[in-house]
Every structure is written in structure tokens, then in C-alpha cells.
Image (tube, one colour):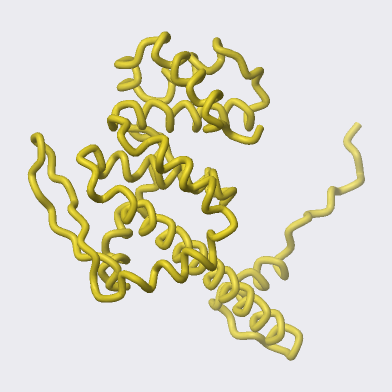
Length: 239
């Protein structure tokens, strides 16, 4: 026997029209709708401002990393990317969702492809690209406003400077391959925790090799030795 009770549609034509109105496709028809549209616009502005502030803070942190390591022969594009990632975690910036799995480890494509332009825009660094060991390597030179980034750094990261300095010094002389390995382990540990998996050597190794086909270059012994090093040196996520 069919039920005579009709289910009430939770999404009405009024809801649809309101969505179009809030998206700007329909004109508000009364004072309440005008207020709703204005509130949405203000909300979007606040979100945009927050994103701009976060981006600028990340640029300041990246500028500090460059300042400390720009003379190091091992400091190139990949190492720079991984140290930005690790230092952001040292600062508890909670930006894990911006990083994707790339061949050389966790990578925020949008940020890293814009950061050198931001350096030029702020006149913190001039950048030249030179061939080095078969790779094109960015070389950074202090620009007109170089000293200004330091004031921002002190404001944003003064209380976290010890943690940032620890990361920078631990990885200063380290080969890019080793930095990639440890940054990938860090990412995998966070991912294991987020997926509510049991954190042990087995799950780490499984997740590590699933990260990218290129990770087969690292042996299980290398992975576990790096994990031990990270534990000893405090380069470990708060999970």
C-alpha cells in the first residue's frame, strides 16, 4: 500500500531564487534581501582580507628562510619549498590543506609559483636564474626594501623565531634529497593521523610509498632512520 504522505521538498523555488539573488543574478526586491546581499559582500571581503594577510605572512616567513640560506650551495627551489612547509608547521599556521602530493614531496603550487614575484613586488629581493649542476637555480640578492621585511618578521614571528631558527639550522647543510625525504615523512604522519590510522612504522611506510611513485628511490631503512632523526631533533608534528 502506497503512503499518502508526500515528503516535503527541503529545497524550494524560493531557495533557488534566493541563491541566484545572493550570487548576483537577480536583483534584491526588498530591504531584507538588500541587507542579506550586503552582509554576504562584507563576508566575502573579510575572507579576501584574511587570505591576503595569510599570504603576506607566508611571504615574510619565506623571505627569512631565503635570507638565512641564500648563500648555501644546497639551497635551491626544492629545498626552499620543503623548508617553507616545515617552518609553517613550526609556526602552527595550519596550512596543510594547501599542500598537494608532488614528486618531490608536499607542494603548494600556487604559493611557490608566486613567491618570487612577491619578493620583487615588495623589493625585498632581486632574483637571477642560473644554471647549476644541470638545474636552473634562483639566486637571491637583497633589494631596496630588504630591511623592511625584517620588521614584519619580528611582528609576525618574533615569538616563534626559536622554532623557525631550529628548523633552518637543522637543514642548513642537508642535501635536498634528505630534506625531501623528511618533509614527505612529516606530511605522511599528519595524513595518517587525519585518517585515524594507527601510527606505526608499517602505516608510515605504506603511506610514504603511496605518496608518489618516485618515493621508491628511498629504502625502508632510510625512511625509518629519518623518522628517528626527526624524533630526536623535534621535527615531528603535534599529533
